[in-house]
Image (spheres, rainbow, N blue to C red):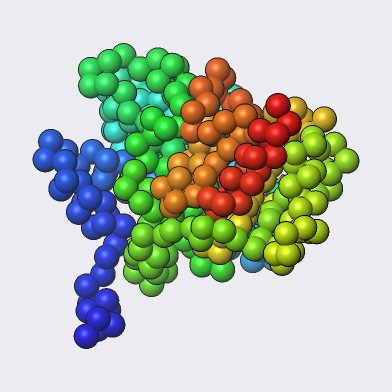
Length: 345
Ligand code: AHM
Ligand code: MG
């Protein structure tokens, strides 16, 4: 019986990735090791996020015990925002100690980290350790986003190795710290979702082969910026609310955490947009560790991702913290946005 089999035959994320690797006979398990270090970072952050609200209470009562069980830099209580700094440190240390990385780019660090030769491997990891930080204090979902590139064996790592188009990524994913902790991953052959079983401390495959609906009924955007939008964005959102072709109006959902907004878009369909506006002509979201990984996942799930000019994964970033406008989601919905931008030219 399938249900019984599931209970005793657990498909953990490590087992899943090991299976995937058997497709590559030359593989030495390096990717599996790298991923297990990313997973460790996600589990740590998840555990902190789950305690963040409580920590504030305990912090007021007396901080000493709480601090002892965590890194001393984790200042509970007064400064919960420290969570993003702590998350960054945990990821950097886990990635360096994996022995499989050479360049790390984090949203938290102005400069890229070049791993010292004795700990060097061939993977470059770009990541946002804790995205949606304005949502921490009120307990709303936040997440970690990551993308992985590889340098050629034996090459000396240089910044250009991470200034590559998103289509060259080997893998991308995010972990959402929400009502449950969900890790969504693509290694270039589809998208799979894993949920943390806290009693096991393992991510278990719960959403195999995620495909985004071809068309959706939800649009997701910060409408507070509407007065500064360009023509095509304004027209598209107008169309969502007042469709002229007899189709039903779309619902609006906007959390303000990219991971949560994209996760819902992936599962339910629809579009997520962070367009350019007059005040921020390049939008807000960062190419390397926000736009690229999410675009990679969208395409792998059968959706699309567009910048207002072209395919998002074709962008070639010039700087590690570059920004880009982004429109991603269901294939047909993004197609409509593309048509509006094409008509503008
Ligand atoms: P952050 O890196 O400061 O957390 O900002 C990124 C977040 C994304 O998660 C989200 O999509 C976006 O900012 C929301 O921005 P806004 O508040 O302008 O709507
Ligand atoms: Mg961010």
